[in-house]
Image 1 (cartoon, helix red, strand yellow):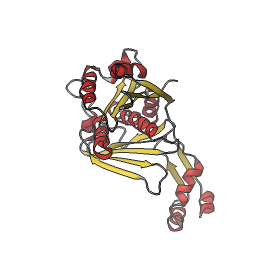
Image 2: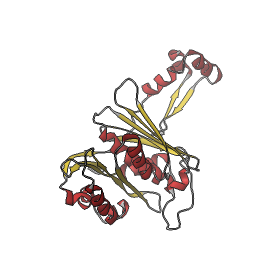
Image 3: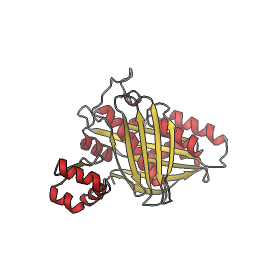
Image 4: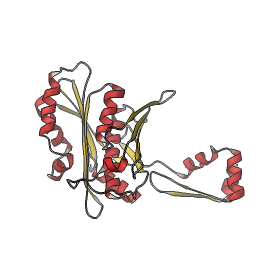
Length: 288
């Protein structure tokens, strides 16, 4: 499998961890949305994180939506994932660009700016759970880790990376998430911190030919870890003409009649896959 995520436990269940390789799906998103390198990095990081969060939900049909909105030129990024490893997303301004950081790295935080992160969990209950916090840095990983700590009271370390080539293609992408479970031994924190400080960046690790399994071995090899699941992850949009038709009908008779009178047709573009759907006057009259 090209893109996949592994789930593991360690330290007798005191740690749960995920590691993902996602270059294929991030490259697909970059091509679909014609993103600049910094927009690719922002969207790719969020898609990777969302794919992990979707697999954490427990059920295939559960949906996780993570939205990051800021006052920078990028505007923000959004990603939605389910429990099957399927994820989709978009950048609000895919053509946004900012100068690189002094160290030559893409300035994702500068492109996003100050703002908020919103996490919506639809797990089949009457109302979805919604959590919202101010952004810590706009660099995506720190903001989601802050969400886990403050909204779910789960100490977490999240690292994400996207390496964009000169031709705007994605060479490497992925990330890892490590969380401490309730009742953990406090000594684990210091031991984990030491391992994390020794670890190079995600993109450097994958550039050296390493895999998600190697990531967990490097981070959790001393903690007696066990891989419990390997799941393929992919960029997937489930839109189709019938779904879009339902969305148009939901506008109501008054607005639909106005569209028919003023335009005589409707064009609807999917934010996630850029597929364009056309409805002529006869189709609109049928909906009315």
